Image (cartoon, rainbow, N blue to C red):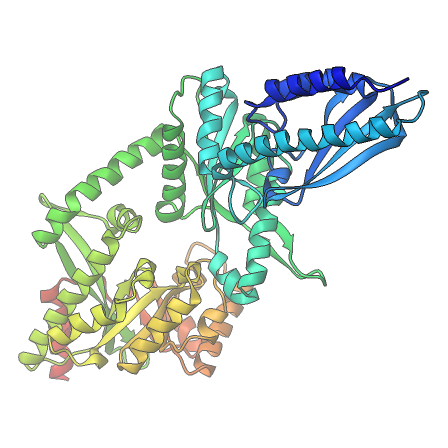
Length: 558
């Protein structure tokens, strides 16, 4: 039987004309268009498989795609062709012969090859168009989606009326900078990728993990999947090395269980971000859920943020000084500068405004304000021939991304002509959340300028011994959580840790001070542990300037 070239030519022309406007690699219309040619060429099944590209993992991840199948394909007799698809990957096209029929003739083979080549041209064009449209929806480094995909998906679910079946979570990898420092950037990137793609691989239809940037992500999940998502984000072991090396990765997260009447993807993002920010910076918790209570907290945050500029301009923030006491003679050995906000006849507690300001760079403005006022006081005391002690000033970790930080600190101190030995900069141990390189740079720079540095609240969070091993601190300030209280039995493990931390700090040449001391029993315990520097209400509360000056005068009086 001779090959019908006229019919073949007609069908091929129709196929090309019908397929020229196709914009999707796996368009149903393309499936319909190949049917006449497949029947004429005795093709029982026509399929393609994309590999070696990001889109093959994401939107084409279900495997080989079948454009035509009459259910009678012979798995042992087929024609296959490998083709490169743009610069993004390759595709294998396979045509199967029908069972029980004679082998394809040479003429049929030739026309099948021509058909496959033409099919490739059309599908390659569709692939390129689809890739151009979908690349913005995919992250460029990790096999997860990007933020536009989250917004697109939530819009679709809102339009379908099914958004109420879903929840969303904004999350950030906790302590990722420390992981980066400890195992190296390359291994840390492997950890990041495995942690996030491991989560993505467990998801169901319409659920997605989307990267916002760096180690920040937002996720959409069905509400019946909440427990799994929360467990995974609370802590998951990630193996990154050939020999089983691993780290435990946890996140700080903000959840929002989406109501049915939600109509804005941006609102979903805002509420997850709000819950995340409050969890991280205000409540200091691993995660929080957005609800009406958080909405009130958000209103409070906005109120504090609105009042802050005028409060700075009007100098409503006052410096209070809490003395540090030498336990061998109970003399004042220094002081810590603490902030109090006086507004409309009342004091706004630090717990109400400090966490709010820490959610933005406003805390940096307050820190420099405090340093400036401390330097003013010290300069005045020196001019008045008072005895002066070293004063420690707290510095938020948010400063550490500022390339001009050291210059700004020195500028304030030197503007008031204050000798550097009278200033100590306190950094909380939660600075393990930031880049060790930045932290080391500022600590070294301050040391070179004869300005002391201290690790504040050591032991309060997820401490890293590298924090004190690798950086040239002067002072280690131990958190009060290690001290026993009257209401509890002495915890042997807690006391052992306290003794070892004190001994370790002294062996490393660090001055050691314990804060939050409130009872005579605690003082005696510190003496037993050979720690002779303390701070707390047992000795003095934070004092206004006038009262603190009386303490300084006692030193002068001997």
